[in-house]
Length: 114
Image (cartoon, rainbow, N blue to C red; front, side, top):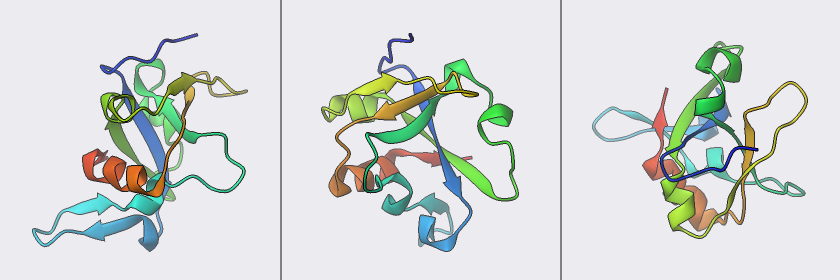
């Protein structure tokens, strides 16, 4: 198991749909908080640990998905445990726990789109 540290980068896979993006006044496309909200029944926000995968593996289909990279320091500094949670076919899978709507907004502000 990988111990996630503040130096790790986490990749959130995002479906290319309008509710997950906004254009800032300076013309930059940014993720919205919707891209970082947990759905009902989820045990944590699903991410990949970038150090354990490649962008090509994490986002197999660039025509339907993109990703946002978030430093693990952001959730860790906000008391959100980040837990390595490998699943079949994805040894880099991890979960960010305790994500509230306010934290989803903070994550979106601090993430950078691919």
